[in-house]
Amino acid sequence: MVREDFGQDFQWGVSSAAFQTEGAVDADGKGSSIWDTFTGRKGKIKHNYHARVANDFYNRYQEDIALVREMHIPNFRFSLSWPRVFPNGIGPENPKAIAYYDRLIDYCLEKGVTPWVTLYHWDLPQALQDRGGWTNRNIIFWLEEYAASAAKHFGDRVQHWMVLNEPTVFTGAGYFFGVHAPGLTGLRNFFPAAHHAALAMGRVGRLLRSALPQAQLGSTFSCSSIHPFSSKPRDVRAATRADALINRLFIEPLLGLGYPIADLNALQGMEKYMLAGDDQSLPFDFDFIGIQNYTREVVKHSYFVPYLRARLVEAKKRKVEAVTEMGWEVYPPAIYEMIKKFSAYPNIPKIYVTENGAAFPDEVREGSVRDPLRVQYLGSHMEQVLRAKQEGCNVQGYFVWTLTDNFEWAEGYHPRFGLVHVDFETQQRIVKESGRWYGAFLSGQ
Image (cartoon, rainbow, N blue to C red; front, side, top):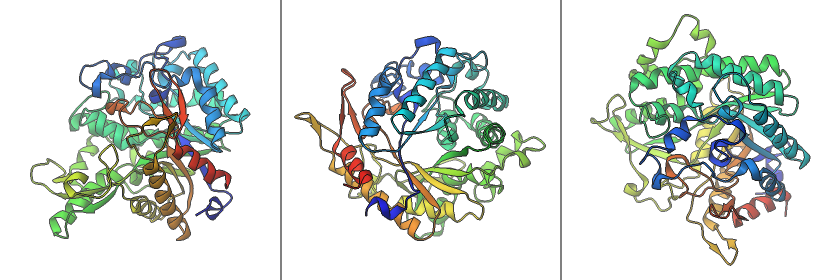
């Protein structure tokens, strides 16, 4: 496998997110986000870590973009911080934040790195959460104001935009299970949050299409290949229900197919929050779909799980050969299966893999980090992407998660996904063996 196998137009990159890397929690007028609040609650984050400094990317972006360039990575996906741009969630804008992102984008372009911007990567302004956050339908208008500002200031230089990052995760973990910010639970929070997130993609997509007619627009979706634990009919049905929730809840309404209620009856609760005209507002013809895959899930029937009647069987209980530091099974065919699954929709646009990667226990020895397991993980998953492409799937890019070790949400700093090792005490960066391997692959060495 060499780079040329994927074709000249295939886009290679690396992804990151503002809250996980920027730090500078209150610098230059930045407002508070729901994750600033959540990390301040004792016991919510492993070891009570916070992201007030994180990677200090806000001050060290030139150093990190230089590493992107050093690894021959042509595309860098990052997110804007909504509470940095709008400290109160809505106007007025923060001119120092606009100036910062101007500098970041200009430096990317100066170094020959193409910026890909995600508008919302989970750091909702706390001021808007105080008004209900994603459970408040007005969030669609708030997000539109933020998107319009970003398009106005950066649209002359940014040609690739993503509206939301993984709506299944931030609504499920944040508004149903309560394990992510803002820490809310129950269907009464999840259903409105999910519906408003689904609506927001189409609404903001239309706004961006009008403001930036030449730009490439998309949104990103978490996905896991769902396998039944056995061939028993009840396990197969459980896998179908899990698939409806984990993989289909947001992509199908976007494609004009509606919510997958037929395969998961509990989703009928979404209808309570639908207003006249929502059926027409949900679909939007994005230019691309970003899929983000790390593993597969094995599912079996469970009487004791409400609504879903299914539970995940953890990898360690299945005694699989290889798992990551997150406890996720290393199963490269999962990414092939998900590209095939999304490609099977009749009206799907082109697909980019906007996140794929793994955390393993890295160690610095004599100034270097050897991480052969990550090299093997990335290589085997890239082979599966190529397999899907060679079978006719319109997959046009692959982005590694992530550039640098960073703050991994509720897991804190323990799991390290980066191509670049970060010492969070000194902020020293070391390009890992995997980063050098990826760079050699991209440069044809």
